Each structure stands twice: as structure tokens, then as C-alpha cells.
Figure 1 (cartoon, rainbow, N blue to C red):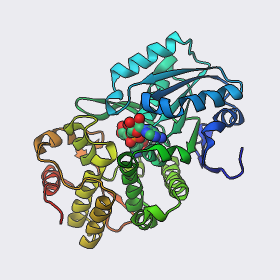
Figure 2: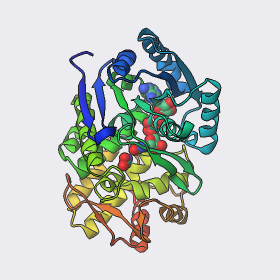
Figure 3: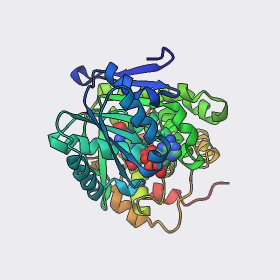
Figure 4: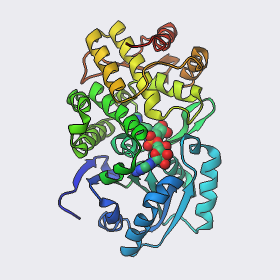
Length: 363
Ligand code: NAD
Ligand code: GLY
């Protein structure tokens, strides 16, 4: 292993694993797997676009380390997080002879990570998997923590499992091929970490072109690792803080039709709404809410809700969200950037007003 790689451990007793972060380390995948003792036949799952860019490099790295592997390519985008694609991938794995002694490797963005992780959690009653995230979104958030999911028409991520990866390999160089839209939507989750845990990330996002992206990614991974270590299955309320902006954001993403808004774009709207509720019910200064909106706009993230996404359709999905606890929504608010808490006092009317507040244009 190159000594310049950074490493963050997710400490979860016998399910602990490392997140290795470095520039150009996709080509070290084979040796990193050997080093982690993951000496198994590999089934890599990716999407068409990522396959074109990085599939060959990955397979070459695996072959160089003596692994036999198969590659399973799906069409990308949010619609891939479905039962139909999970079934298609599972059939393809079975045909390739994947069994309980194999390892699944997810190469791609959050969609591939969530889908491959879900399949890994149920194929042959559960086999290990490794995440090799290639988007900002997946590197700062979705590849770490073991939440896997597919979507239903009724709502985002409604079917899934907790299944921790055995290793996460983050090649920061893979971000150089991302389009501006995909890059910026990932920054929405960095802003989330800034709001809930470390306001210095907000300063960093304010001048992102000057920032060392590796450091930002490492900081986000550290925050996520410590939250997941404290509350792996989102039971105590600690992990729920990661859902800042997600209750309304998920509902908007689903109501718009999967794939219309990128995940981070929907979360941008959800964070504006959560910020608005924070000013009303948690004492967040209005200037801070304006700062949040300005920052999202600066990253070309949407802050105004399109007219063709009706509030009723959003509200319907808010109420099928997993964040309900005994009939009451657990909504994440912030009184002061750098910290957040879960409130059970937000009512349906409040949520509706927050959604409506998103229709007001920002000058
Ligand atoms: P994505 O996986 O759809 O990737 C976005 C696009 O970028 C795709 O078209 C993909 O082909 C392309 N792409 C990927 N890597 C590339 C690269 N290096 N260069 C060029 N193009 C590349 O979307 P995403 O934003 O990465 O992930 C969103 C998903 O992540 C959502 O489904 C969301 O629910 C999920 N998510 C999950 C968690 C979790 O904890 N499990 C957390 C956050 C988000
Ligand atoms: N992205 C939210 C979580 O991992 O809990």
C-alpha cells in the first residue's frame, strides 16, 4: 500500500472495516483486497457509464493480484434501485457461479453502492461486499455505514437492509471524470455534514475550488464513521442526524419521478426546508438560513421547488417515510450550524408550510 493513502476505520467490533482514501488507488484494488484478507472470487457490479470509464482498470487490478472475477453491468441512474434490477443482477450472479465464498464489489455512485449492497445482503442469504465509490456523493456518504436500499413507487429506500461493507476504497482521482452536475449534487451531503457536525465544512464549501478535496472527503468519512459507530442501526437518534434535509428531500425526489432530480438536488431543497423549520422552531438565526441557501445556490443546486411537483404528492410520500416513530415524524433541526437534534414536535401542517416555503423565489 502507498503510504500516502489515508485510512479511516469504522469501528463496529467484529464488523469493523477500513475506508482507504487516495488518489489513483483504483489500480491498487486487488492488492488492497489481499491486504484486507478478502481472498475470494469477485463479482463486480457497476453501471454502463462507470464500466466504460473504469471497468477495465478494475478488472486488470484484480487479475494482477490473482483474483478471478466477473463483471455485471446495469443501466445506471436512480431507476436501477428497483426489485427488477436487483433480480436481473442476482440472475447474472447465479449464472456466473457466484456463491457464498464470493465477494461482491460495487464500483460506481450511490445507486450502484445501494443496489449492490442490497443484493449482497440477500444473495445466497448474504455475502460480503466491498465499496469502490466513484462519485462525491458515494465517497462522502453512501459507501460508508452499511445502509443498502432499493426504491418503491411509494417512497425512496423503502426496501433495504443494514449490511456493512468489508472494505471501502476511495479513489479521489475518479472524481475528475464527473460532470459538474453530479459533482455539485455530492457537495449537498458535504453541506449536510457542515450543518450537523462541523461548520468548517461550510467554510470549505464556500470556496471549494481552492480546497483539497481529499481532506474534505476524509473529514466527512470521519464524521460518518463516528456516527455509525455510535448508532449503527439508527436507534438512538444519533444516526438520524444524517437525515438533515432528507425527509422532505426524499419525498420531493420520489414525487418528481426517480431520476428527474439527482439525489443531492432533492436534498438541497430538503435542506432549505429543514433550515426554514429550524429558524421557526429551533432558533437558527435567519442569517444562517440565508447563508445555507446562498451556499446551495453557489453550487448550482436547486433551492426553489418546481411548480409541476405538487405539495400533495410530496406530503403523501413524507408520510410513508421510514423516519416515523410511533406515528410521529422524527425531524432533524439545527439551532446552530455544526450541531443538530431530532425533534418530534414538527406537525403535518409545519411540513406542508415548509414545502410551500420552497416555492418562494430567492433573489
Ligand atoms: P449515481 O450513482 O446515479 O451516479 C450519478 C451519475 O454519475 C451516474 O450516471 C453514474 O453513471 C455517473 N458516474 C459515477 N461515477 C462517475 C465518475 N467517476 N465519472 C463520471 N461519471 C460517473 O448517483 P449518486 O449521487 O452517486 O448516488 C445517489 C444515490 O445514493 C441515491 O440513490 C441515494 O439514495 C443514495 N445514497 C445512499 C446513502 C446511504 O447511506 N446508503 C447515502 C446517500 C445517498
Ligand atoms: N445517509 C444516511 C445514513 O447513512 O444514515
